[in-house]
Amino acid sequence: MKSIIENKKFNTKMETSDWRYSASIVGIIKYFNYLVNKGEEVEADLYEIDEDVISYNSESITEERYLLFVEKYFESAMHHRVIEQIINSTEFTDDQIKLVNDKLKANVIMKKVFGEIKFSGNNNEIILQKINENRLLLIKETYRSGKSLYANFANTNSLFGEPRSICRIQNYNIDIGKKSRSISYNWDFRTYKSEDEMEFDFIPFAFSKSYEGFFINNNYSIKQLFGTNNLISISENPRSTLFCDMKNSANFIDFDAEVIIKNRDADYFETLYIRKDAIKIFQKIRNYKAIKIKYKVNDNYYMDFEKIVTNNILNNIKLDALIEILLKSKSSYTYNIKTLIEINTLIYGGDKMDKQMKSAYGSAKRVMKTIPENKVNSYKQKLISAITFKDYERFCEILLQLSSYSGVIFDFAYDLFEDFDENKNIAYTFINALNNESNKDNGGEKI
Image (cartoon, rainbow, N blue to C red; front, side):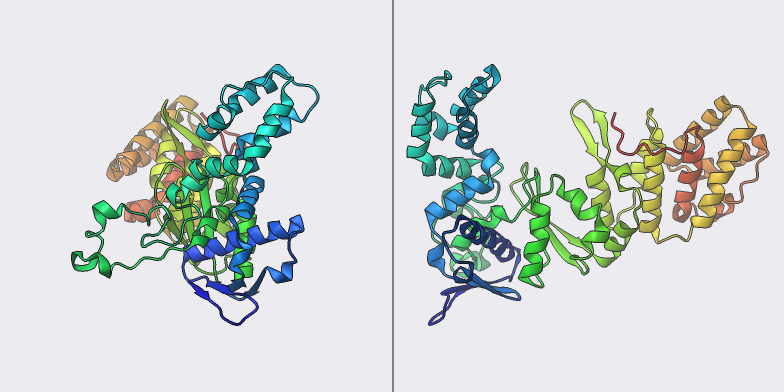
């Protein structure tokens, strides 16, 4: 929450009362640090942090400073900055000239400012002059309407606006004319409670710059909050940074934490909760890159295994369906499957099946030495078919037939006969071991 301070060094303070305030605080600190680096202010005069409260002077936040901060922070998304970087050179390639001309028409405000001007390689000065004369306007309109920028997080009409009766943030913002009664108690809009602050305009700076934006609301202290999200914001793949290196992440996420996700395709925010049990699973994953698979379902759809697996771990959902998809694949995913089985075993409840899984693996290798490869493949396909159709009695029958045919005793099979559902990872291990792959990591393979 935000409150006004009287007769103090600072006139405003904000607490990490919910994720919107926490994210605003992270963005505000980045803004103030930008001012310090520019040499505009002395750091001690800008803000002060006390555990979960930040104090600052609201007058230090101006529209011009904010926009110049936007230009620096989201520089690669600012079309005029790309143009400046190119035409400040002395020589230009055909591709550079084409890129500049594309940027001159990149969005509505660029078209409006530059009109019919085209870059020829000799008219640098007029383009640079136009940029300098209209810099703040170019920044504001590009940022306000950018699908990866302000428009991804908030109502585009709310930028720099005073607090309103409806929150400016996506998912919290509604059409008052159409829905004011339906969201109110007893259909009376006067009963509706909402929070909106001008500082919410700093929320975009708190999320990672990736297509799937992350903000970690570990707000036990502002210093920890800022440190965590500053690390995530500079990562090219924040999902991997957050979950892949969980041993290091646990240094700043050692308790139940809230993660806010904003996908550019969605007009709402998602919330994930990282529980201690999930953290323990992430810490035990030895071959995380093996789940970085983009699996082609058809020409229009690829399954992002990394995203699905991490979500399943967070929500304690078993990986059976993913394992079976890869088992049925015509391509080889042996070691990807091995990692998925290891994770699945942890989700099932730990390493209680470890001994029998080793037995299943060893039995499969003995079978391969005993019977012809074509027979191995035939039995393997029958087993895959039975387990994917959840015909567990049929699976056990085929297993007995294979044991009889090969002369190999399957000690692990007794657990499957007793409770197939709870010991399914033993079956997956046996099927996956029926192959001639060398002991080589093929993680991250794409098809």
